[in-house]
Every structure is written in structure tokens, then in C-alpha cells.
Image (cartoon, rainbow, N blue to C red; front, side):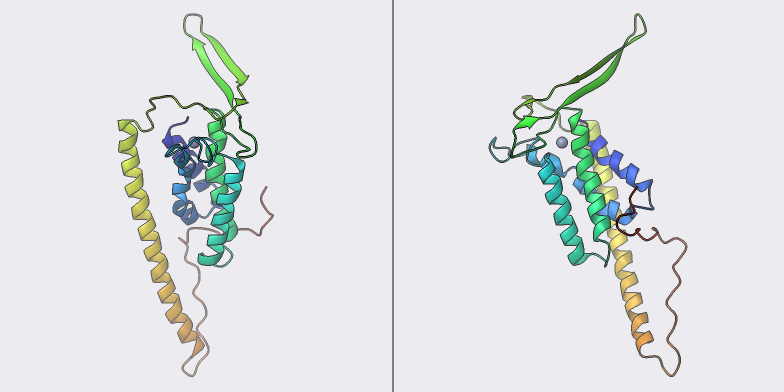
Length: 223
Ligand SMILES: [Zn+2]
């Protein structure tokens, strides 16, 4: 299985590099979703709660994206739900895509108990400088077998995780505080516009240059 760092950082950096489609604030808010699938490791009971199956299935992707979309429609800014759903899809989808090449997933859980796995890696014979390519499907019946001892977090990764979590919490707090302040200021401005004292309503404020994102394109413009 890829290290938690791979799951946590690769999709995050990928989305932050395409700001036209992904609002960095949403990429930040939903960041814990990068690790959500691995919660099925804890307390796995072998029947309905199975590691690499329950939260690593295509059904779980659909459910998580759907729930995020519904929650965003209820609580996020108007029109932002598709952006939230897209970020959730990249986070959850990238996790199981990566696991496909490192241990495998039961994609069609709970309908078919079949692990889909593909091994592809390249080693180099240093004596002859020859690359040795391993490329073979290893799809098999049942869920992936988890080894008896497994270092889910190494001490070095714990150190990095500690930094990332603090960094994430601080950024989320700052972003939410900024939104709260903007909302209060805009609310006050709107009230003034609604009841102008003998003059025309004040024009709406111009968007500032350092506004983080361009508006999300209309649905269906993904390439
Ligand atoms: Zn996983």
C-alpha cells in the first residue's frame, strides 16, 4: 500500500496546480478525504466491514461523492456543490486507483468479492545494468490479505503527519475566519445598498486581485 503521504499529497498537489477547475479552499477543506478509505482497516469484521473493500469500492466512491455534493448544496455557497463533488471524486478516486497497484481493491464490493490488483514495477540488475520489468495482473478471489504486522505509520511519517495536520488545521481556521469576516462586511454593505440615504446604491465591490480562484466553469466543461 502506498504510504499515507502518497495518498495525502499527490492528489492535493495535482488539484492545486489546476486552479481553473479546483478551488484551493475546497481542496483544503476536503483534504481529510484523502485518508478516509483506509478507515475500513480499523475494526474490520470480515463480513460487511472489510479492509480494501468497504471504503475502497466504486460504490463507496459514489456514496462519498454524493454525500459531499448533498452537504455542499445544503451548507456551501450557492453553485459550489459541483466543485465539492469534483474534489471529493479526485480524493477518493485517486486513493483507490493508487491502491490498485499496491495490494489491490475489491472494486465491486459488496456484489463481487474479487480483488483487482496489478503489479508493475522496475528493478535494475546492478551487475549488468539491466532493467527487470515486472508487469502482471494479480487479480484474485476475496479481499486482499493483510500481513500480521504492518507499519501503517513509520516514526518519520508520524512526524510529517503531525506537521501536515497542524498546518491544515491552521489554514482551515484562517480560511473560515476570512469567510466569516467577508460575509459580515458584505452583509453590512448590502444593507447599506438596500436603504441608500437619498442617493444611488453603492456599486458592488470590485473583486480583489488576490482572490484565490476563478469561478468554476459551467457544468460539463471538463476536458
Ligand atoms: Zn487504501
